Length: 344
Image (cartoon, rainbow, N blue to C red; front, side):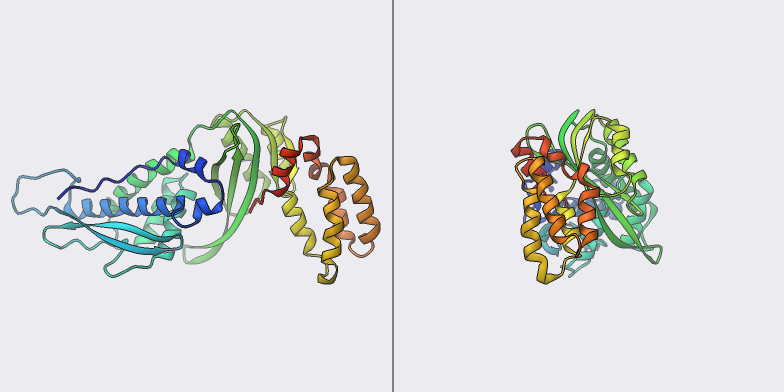
Protein backbone atom coordinates (compact mmCIF):
# COMPACT_ATOMS: atom_id res chain seq x y z
CA UNK A 1 0.00 0.00 0.00
CA UNK A 2 1.47 3.44 -0.92
CA UNK A 3 2.80 5.65 1.86
CA UNK A 4 1.17 8.97 2.68
CA UNK A 5 2.85 12.13 1.40
CA UNK A 6 2.39 15.00 3.88
CA UNK A 7 2.55 18.29 1.95
CA UNK A 8 4.78 21.05 3.28
CA UNK A 9 3.08 24.39 3.92
CA UNK A 10 5.06 27.53 3.10
CA UNK A 11 3.76 29.76 5.90
CA UNK A 12 5.19 32.98 4.52
CA UNK A 13 3.62 32.38 1.11
CA UNK A 14 0.29 31.20 2.52
CA UNK A 15 -0.01 34.13 4.94
CA UNK A 16 0.39 36.59 2.07
CA UNK A 17 -2.59 34.97 0.37
CA UNK A 18 -4.84 35.69 3.38
CA UNK A 19 -6.91 38.79 2.59
CA UNK A 20 -9.23 38.67 5.62
CA UNK A 21 -9.94 36.78 8.83
CA UNK A 22 -12.04 34.22 6.92
CA UNK A 23 -8.97 33.26 4.87
CA UNK A 24 -7.05 32.81 8.12
CA UNK A 25 -9.47 31.04 10.48
CA UNK A 26 -12.57 30.35 8.35
CA UNK A 27 -13.64 27.17 6.58
CA UNK A 28 -10.71 25.69 4.64
CA UNK A 29 -8.62 28.60 5.93
CA UNK A 30 -4.91 28.55 6.67
CA UNK A 31 -5.30 27.65 10.36
CA UNK A 32 -7.50 24.67 9.50
CA UNK A 33 -4.92 23.39 7.00
CA UNK A 34 -2.07 24.04 9.43
CA UNK A 35 -3.89 22.12 12.15
CA UNK A 36 -4.49 19.11 9.91
CA UNK A 37 -0.87 19.15 8.72
CA UNK A 38 0.55 19.25 12.26
CA UNK A 39 -1.80 16.55 13.55
CA UNK A 40 -0.71 14.33 10.67
CA UNK A 41 2.94 14.83 11.61
CA UNK A 42 2.12 13.98 15.23
CA UNK A 43 0.49 10.73 14.12
CA UNK A 44 3.54 9.85 12.02
CA UNK A 45 5.79 10.48 15.04
CA UNK A 46 3.59 8.28 17.22
CA UNK A 47 3.77 5.41 14.73
CA UNK A 48 7.56 5.73 14.52
CA UNK A 49 7.73 5.56 18.31
CA UNK A 50 5.37 2.56 18.34
CA UNK A 51 7.42 0.62 15.78
CA UNK A 52 10.72 1.75 17.24
CA UNK A 53 12.20 2.95 13.93
CA UNK A 54 11.91 5.54 11.19
CA UNK A 55 9.19 5.43 8.53
CA UNK A 56 11.13 3.59 5.79
CA UNK A 57 13.58 1.73 8.03
CA UNK A 58 13.53 -2.06 7.88
CA UNK A 59 14.98 -4.62 10.27
CA UNK A 60 16.19 -8.15 9.72
CA UNK A 61 13.94 -9.92 12.22
CA UNK A 62 10.87 -11.29 10.51
CA UNK A 63 8.91 -10.99 13.71
CA UNK A 64 8.99 -7.18 13.75
CA UNK A 65 5.86 -5.16 13.13
CA UNK A 66 5.45 -2.94 10.05
CA UNK A 67 3.24 -0.18 8.74
CA UNK A 68 0.05 -1.17 6.96
CA UNK A 69 -1.25 1.94 5.22
CA UNK A 70 -3.79 4.41 6.61
CA UNK A 71 -7.43 4.80 7.54
CA UNK A 72 -9.15 8.14 6.98
CA UNK A 73 -10.83 9.95 9.83
CA UNK A 74 -12.72 13.24 10.00
CA UNK A 75 -12.33 15.23 13.21
CA UNK A 76 -14.10 18.40 14.32
CA UNK A 77 -12.03 21.36 15.47
CA UNK A 78 -12.69 25.01 16.24
CA UNK A 79 -11.52 25.75 12.69
CA UNK A 80 -13.94 23.28 11.08
CA UNK A 81 -13.73 19.64 10.02
CA UNK A 82 -10.27 18.28 9.27
CA UNK A 83 -9.42 15.06 7.43
CA UNK A 84 -6.56 13.07 8.90
CA UNK A 85 -5.06 9.73 7.95
CA UNK A 86 -4.48 7.39 10.88
CA UNK A 87 -1.43 5.13 10.35
CA UNK A 88 -2.02 1.39 10.75
CA UNK A 89 0.34 -1.45 11.61
CA UNK A 90 0.15 -5.07 10.51
CA UNK A 91 -0.45 -6.38 14.00
CA UNK A 92 -3.22 -3.82 14.64
CA UNK A 93 -1.58 -2.81 17.92
CA UNK A 94 -1.16 0.91 17.22
CA UNK A 95 -3.45 3.17 19.27
CA UNK A 96 -2.70 6.90 18.78
CA UNK A 97 -2.75 9.12 21.84
CA UNK A 98 -3.24 12.47 20.16
CA UNK A 99 -6.53 11.33 18.58
CA UNK A 100 -7.86 8.38 20.51
CA UNK A 101 -10.06 5.69 19.01
CA UNK A 102 -13.64 6.86 18.41
CA UNK A 103 -12.67 10.47 19.23
CA UNK A 104 -14.01 12.94 16.64
CA UNK A 105 -14.04 16.28 18.49
CA UNK A 106 -10.86 18.04 19.61
CA UNK A 107 -11.59 21.74 20.09
CA UNK A 108 -9.24 21.96 23.08
CA UNK A 109 -6.60 19.94 21.28
CA UNK A 110 -6.33 22.26 18.30
CA UNK A 111 -5.99 25.31 20.52
CA UNK A 112 -3.00 23.67 22.17
CA UNK A 113 -1.46 22.69 18.84
CA UNK A 114 -1.86 26.19 17.38
CA UNK A 115 -0.37 27.43 20.66
CA UNK A 116 2.85 25.69 19.64
CA UNK A 117 3.25 28.25 16.89
CA UNK A 118 2.50 31.19 19.17
CA UNK A 119 4.96 29.88 21.77
CA UNK A 120 7.42 28.45 19.28
CA UNK A 121 10.33 30.66 20.32
CA UNK A 122 11.37 28.31 23.13
CA UNK A 123 12.08 24.58 23.04
CA UNK A 124 11.09 24.32 26.70
CA UNK A 125 7.74 25.99 25.98
CA UNK A 126 6.98 23.52 23.21
CA UNK A 127 7.97 20.55 25.35
CA UNK A 128 5.78 21.86 28.18
CA UNK A 129 2.86 22.16 25.77
CA UNK A 130 3.44 18.62 24.50
CA UNK A 131 3.67 17.27 28.04
CA UNK A 132 0.38 18.94 28.95
CA UNK A 133 -1.21 17.70 25.75
CA UNK A 134 -0.18 14.05 26.14
CA UNK A 135 -0.17 13.62 29.90
CA UNK A 136 2.31 11.89 32.19
CA UNK A 137 2.65 8.66 30.19
CA UNK A 138 4.56 10.25 27.30
CA UNK A 139 8.12 8.98 26.96
CA UNK A 140 11.14 11.27 26.55
CA UNK A 141 11.78 9.70 23.13
CA UNK A 142 8.23 10.49 22.07
CA UNK A 143 8.56 14.08 23.26
CA UNK A 144 11.79 14.42 21.31
CA UNK A 145 10.28 13.01 18.10
CA UNK A 146 7.26 15.31 18.17
CA UNK A 147 9.29 18.36 19.19
CA UNK A 148 11.67 17.73 16.31
CA UNK A 149 8.80 17.59 13.82
CA UNK A 150 7.11 20.76 15.05
CA UNK A 151 10.16 22.83 15.92
CA UNK A 152 11.58 23.07 12.42
CA UNK A 153 8.41 24.66 11.04
CA UNK A 154 7.81 26.83 14.09
CA UNK A 155 11.34 28.22 14.26
CA UNK A 156 11.48 28.81 10.51
CA UNK A 157 8.32 30.92 10.68
CA UNK A 158 9.27 32.82 13.84
CA UNK A 159 12.72 33.71 12.47
CA UNK A 160 12.13 34.06 8.74
CA UNK A 161 13.75 37.09 7.05
CA UNK A 162 11.49 40.10 6.53
CA UNK A 163 11.30 42.86 3.95
CA UNK A 164 13.54 45.92 4.54
CA UNK A 165 10.63 48.41 4.33
CA UNK A 166 6.96 48.15 5.33
CA UNK A 167 4.65 51.09 4.59
CA UNK A 168 2.22 50.23 7.41
CA UNK A 169 2.62 47.96 10.43
CA UNK A 170 -0.29 47.28 12.79
CA UNK A 171 0.62 46.41 16.37
CA UNK A 172 -2.02 44.90 18.59
CA UNK A 173 -2.37 42.62 21.60
CA UNK A 174 -4.85 39.83 22.29
CA UNK A 175 -5.34 38.85 25.95
CA UNK A 176 -6.36 35.34 26.94
CA UNK A 177 -6.24 32.96 29.91
CA UNK A 178 -4.47 29.61 29.94
CA UNK A 179 -3.90 26.85 32.47
CA UNK A 180 -0.27 26.73 33.59
CA UNK A 181 1.02 24.53 36.41
CA UNK A 182 -2.54 23.91 37.63
CA UNK A 183 -3.35 27.62 37.72
CA UNK A 184 -5.25 29.96 35.40
CA UNK A 185 -2.91 32.75 34.29
CA UNK A 186 -3.27 35.69 31.92
CA UNK A 187 -1.18 35.84 28.76
CA UNK A 188 -0.83 38.42 26.02
CA UNK A 189 -0.17 37.63 22.37
CA UNK A 190 1.67 40.51 20.69
CA UNK A 191 0.81 40.53 17.00
CA UNK A 192 2.42 42.51 14.17
CA UNK A 193 0.59 42.57 10.87
CA UNK A 194 1.96 44.62 7.98
CA UNK A 195 1.16 45.77 4.49
CA UNK A 196 4.19 45.15 2.29
CA UNK A 197 5.33 47.27 -0.66
CA UNK A 198 3.01 45.34 -2.98
CA UNK A 199 -0.04 45.93 -0.78
CA UNK A 200 -0.24 42.37 0.58
CA UNK A 201 -0.92 41.61 4.22
CA UNK A 202 1.75 39.70 6.11
CA UNK A 203 1.79 38.61 9.75
CA UNK A 204 5.34 39.42 10.78
CA UNK A 205 5.20 37.51 14.03
CA UNK A 206 3.45 36.58 17.26
CA UNK A 207 5.17 36.99 20.62
CA UNK A 208 3.82 35.76 23.97
CA UNK A 209 4.13 37.74 27.21
CA UNK A 210 2.56 37.77 30.63
CA UNK A 211 0.89 41.13 30.05
CA UNK A 212 1.01 44.05 27.67
CA UNK A 213 3.87 46.49 28.19
CA UNK A 214 6.16 48.88 26.33
CA UNK A 215 9.25 46.87 27.32
CA UNK A 216 8.05 43.77 25.51
CA UNK A 217 7.06 45.86 22.47
CA UNK A 218 10.63 47.18 22.45
CA UNK A 219 11.93 43.61 22.22
CA UNK A 220 9.42 42.93 19.43
CA UNK A 221 10.73 45.91 17.45
CA UNK A 222 14.33 44.78 17.98
CA UNK A 223 13.37 41.34 16.71
CA UNK A 224 11.87 42.88 13.57
CA UNK A 225 15.05 44.87 13.02
CA UNK A 226 17.24 41.80 13.53
CA UNK A 227 15.18 39.96 10.91
CA UNK A 228 15.86 42.63 8.29
CA UNK A 229 13.34 45.45 8.77
CA UNK A 230 15.12 48.77 8.26
CA UNK A 231 12.23 51.22 8.17
CA UNK A 232 8.49 51.48 8.88
CA UNK A 233 6.54 54.41 7.45
CA UNK A 234 3.48 54.25 9.72
CA UNK A 235 3.02 52.23 12.91
CA UNK A 236 -0.66 51.89 13.81
CA UNK A 237 -1.37 50.93 17.43
CA UNK A 238 -3.63 51.45 20.40
CA UNK A 239 -2.90 54.14 22.98
CA UNK A 240 -0.58 52.18 25.27
CA UNK A 241 1.62 54.61 27.19
CA UNK A 242 5.29 54.28 26.30
CA UNK A 243 4.69 52.26 23.12
CA UNK A 244 5.48 55.14 20.68
CA UNK A 245 8.80 55.80 22.44
CA UNK A 246 9.64 52.08 22.31
CA UNK A 247 9.07 51.95 18.54
CA UNK A 248 10.92 55.19 17.86
CA UNK A 249 13.92 53.89 19.80
CA UNK A 250 14.34 51.21 17.10
CA UNK A 251 12.83 52.99 14.07
CA UNK A 252 13.44 56.73 14.68
CA UNK A 253 11.74 57.93 11.45
CA UNK A 254 8.46 56.07 12.00
CA UNK A 255 5.15 57.97 12.03
CA UNK A 256 2.90 56.99 14.95
CA UNK A 257 -0.81 56.57 14.27
CA UNK A 258 -3.06 55.60 17.15
CA UNK A 259 -5.72 53.19 15.97
CA UNK A 260 -8.90 55.16 15.23
CA UNK A 261 -11.06 52.07 15.70
CA UNK A 262 -9.66 51.52 19.19
CA UNK A 263 -10.16 55.20 20.00
CA UNK A 264 -13.79 55.11 18.85
CA UNK A 265 -14.50 51.94 20.82
CA UNK A 266 -12.96 53.40 23.97
CA UNK A 267 -14.99 56.59 23.53
CA UNK A 268 -18.37 55.02 22.90
CA UNK A 269 -18.09 52.98 26.11
CA UNK A 270 -18.62 56.17 28.10
CA UNK A 271 -21.50 57.56 26.03
CA UNK A 272 -25.07 56.96 27.19
CA UNK A 273 -27.09 54.90 24.73
CA UNK A 274 -29.58 57.74 24.24
CA UNK A 275 -26.72 60.02 23.07
CA UNK A 276 -24.65 57.52 21.08
CA UNK A 277 -26.27 58.15 17.68
CA UNK A 278 -25.96 61.94 17.88
CA UNK A 279 -22.46 61.76 19.37
CA UNK A 280 -21.21 59.40 16.63
CA UNK A 281 -22.64 61.70 13.95
CA UNK A 282 -20.57 64.59 15.33
CA UNK A 283 -17.51 62.40 15.90
CA UNK A 284 -17.48 61.23 12.27
CA UNK A 285 -16.95 64.84 11.23
CA UNK A 286 -13.63 64.65 13.08
CA UNK A 287 -12.00 61.47 11.80
CA UNK A 288 -13.61 61.61 8.33
CA UNK A 289 -12.59 65.21 7.68
CA UNK A 290 -10.84 65.91 4.37
CA UNK A 291 -7.84 67.55 6.07
CA UNK A 292 -6.49 68.23 9.55
CA UNK A 293 -7.65 71.85 9.64
CA UNK A 294 -11.26 70.79 9.14
CA UNK A 295 -10.77 67.96 11.63
CA UNK A 296 -9.58 70.40 14.30
CA UNK A 297 -12.63 72.60 13.74
CA UNK A 298 -14.89 69.54 14.00
CA UNK A 299 -13.13 68.53 17.22
CA UNK A 300 -13.67 72.00 18.68
CA UNK A 301 -17.36 71.75 17.78
CA UNK A 302 -17.51 68.29 19.35
CA UNK A 303 -16.01 69.71 22.55
CA UNK A 304 -18.44 72.64 22.69
CA UNK A 305 -21.41 70.28 22.18
CA UNK A 306 -20.41 67.33 24.38
CA UNK A 307 -17.49 68.51 26.52
CA UNK A 308 -19.54 69.40 29.58
CA UNK A 309 -21.38 66.04 29.58
CA UNK A 310 -18.51 63.76 28.56
CA UNK A 311 -15.26 65.56 29.46
CA UNK A 312 -13.16 62.38 29.76
CA UNK A 313 -14.04 61.32 26.21
CA UNK A 314 -13.22 64.71 24.70
CA UNK A 315 -9.97 64.96 26.66
CA UNK A 316 -8.95 61.56 25.32
CA UNK A 317 -9.18 62.93 21.76
CA UNK A 318 -7.51 66.27 22.43
CA UNK A 319 -4.69 64.85 24.58
CA UNK A 320 -3.82 62.21 21.97
CA UNK A 321 -4.47 64.35 18.89
CA UNK A 322 -0.83 64.37 17.73
CA UNK A 323 -0.87 60.58 17.30
CA UNK A 324 -4.52 60.39 16.20
CA UNK A 325 -4.12 62.86 13.34
CA UNK A 326 -1.00 61.45 11.66
CA UNK A 327 -2.95 59.99 8.74
CA UNK A 328 -3.97 63.50 7.56
CA UNK A 329 -0.37 63.90 6.32
CA UNK A 330 -0.93 61.15 3.73
CA UNK A 331 -3.08 60.70 0.60
CA UNK A 332 -6.74 59.57 0.91
CA UNK A 333 -5.89 55.96 -0.01
CA UNK A 334 -3.49 55.68 2.95
CA UNK A 335 -6.00 57.40 5.24
CA UNK A 336 -8.72 54.88 4.46
CA UNK A 337 -6.38 51.99 5.29
CA UNK A 338 -5.43 53.56 8.62
CA UNK A 339 -8.97 54.54 9.62
CA UNK A 340 -10.89 51.45 8.74
CA UNK A 341 -8.44 48.67 9.49
CA UNK A 342 -9.67 46.89 12.62
CA UNK A 343 -6.67 45.80 14.60
CA UNK A 344 -8.59 43.21 16.60
